[in-house]
Length: 149
Image (cartoon, rainbow, N blue to C red):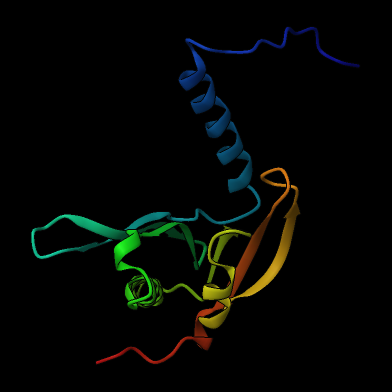
């Protein structure tokens, strides 16, 4: 039997509704899994003037690193900066006790780059964005190279 309720598209109160939903979901999850102890991981690459020309944004939790964003400015690409950011993130994640990394990339972005770095596709979202694909990749940190001196 369904409870009587009203479903509403929120606008002004969306943040408080989001927080209530997130709190409820976290409460449920704690009964089935340990706290993830998420920690933000943010790296920047700056030029000689201190301007950000690349960066990586992610978080660690449940012994995984999730790379949410990795970007390198156009003129700085193909020079190893993306690789340096990714390796630095992997090394920090390993220091935090992570065993794996996961991320996603679009068909028109960097799938081949990640595969060269030891990542493998574990999922594909077809027609996202329309006419393209989104790839989900993972890597075991034990497959990573030893930290560079």
